Length: 52
Image 1 (cartoon, rainbow, N blue to C red):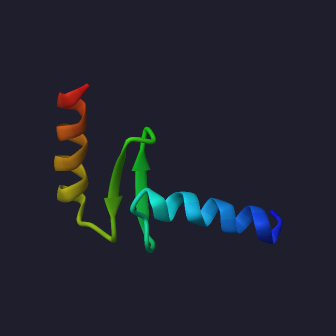
Image 2 (cartoon, rainbow, N blue to C red):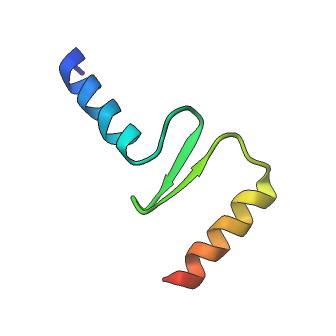
Image 3 (tube, rainbow, N blue to C red):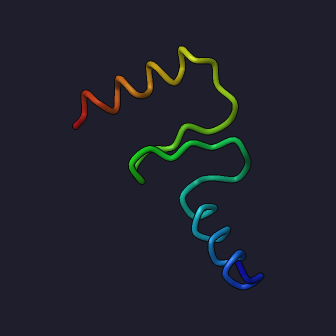
């Protein structure tokens, strides 16, 4: 990846609320930011599934 493309990709994700790692983007719609315990992922994924 070129430096310019890398900066563009970084700008895209920052505009979507990702400012650090780890960050998990689910289906391009939802963000789970930071290192989270398994229970947080489970609760978030169940909530996402109920909205589909």
